[in-house]
Image (tube, rainbow, N blue to C red):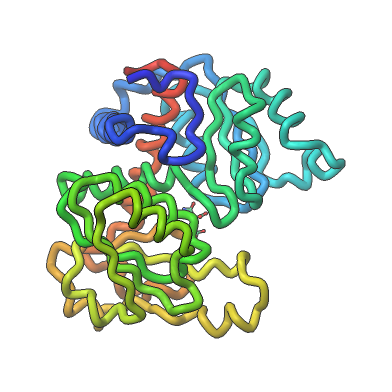
Length: 309
Ligand code: NCD
C-alpha cells in the first residue's frame, strides 16, 4: 500500500482499501504490540495543537512511544510564536525539519490542509474546527470492525450535535463508502448535519438517511449508536447552548429497548449525554474505543513513515 509520505487531512485522501489496510494493521498491532515495539526507532513525531485535546494528542504520543519513536510538540499555542503572529506556513516549514511526521489540531477549518501544502513530511489533521477529524474516523472504523466483525450491513445512528461535531462529519461521510450502511440522524432541528454534507452524501453514495428528533423512537432498530457532545465552544451564544445542552441523555431506561448487541460509541469527552450508569452496560464501548485509537494511530504513523507495509 503506497501510503508512505502521504498526508491525511481528510478521510477521502485514502481509498476504501487504504482505510481498511490501516484498520487491519491497527488490529494486528493491538493483538501483538511487542512485535512493533521498535518499528519507529529514531523517528520523531511532532504535535502542533492549537486547540485543547486530551485523547487525540496523548494517543498520538502514546502511539509513537509504543512504536519506539520519540515525540516533541506543543499543546498550547500561546506558548509558541503563533502568539507573536507567526503564520502556520512558516511554523510548519521549520518544524518539518525537527520531526519526521507532524500532527496538527487547529480551531480554523482548513488550517491542516494549508499546513500540509508547506510540509515536507507527512501531515495529519487531528481536528480542524467543526470540519473534519480523520484519525477519530480511523479509531471509529477500527472499533466497529473489532466489535461487529466487519464494517458493513449496519444501522448506524448519530445522536446529538450533528451540526458542529467534526467526528460525525468525518465518520458519516466515510461510512457512506462502506457496503450497506443505513443512517439515522438524531438531533434537534437546530443541530442537524450541515446541508452541504447531506447533499454530498446523497448525491455521491447510495445510502438511506433517516432524520429524527427522537432517540427513544428508533433505538430498538440500531446496531451502532454514536453519541456526541453538544459542542459548546462552537456556539455563537451561551443561551442557545444552555437550551440544547441536555437534549439527549442516554440512560439505562432508554437502553431497555435496544438490541442486545448494540454497540454504543462516543468519541469522548462525555459531558451529560451518557449517564454514568450506562458505563457498566456491556454494550458501552467508548472507553475501549479510546484505547483502540492508540493502535489505529500506530498503524497510521507506521504506514505514513513507510516503516510497515
Ligand atoms: C472530539 C473532538 O475533538 O472533536 N474529541 C476527540 O478528539 N476524541 C469530540 C469532542 O470534542 O466532542
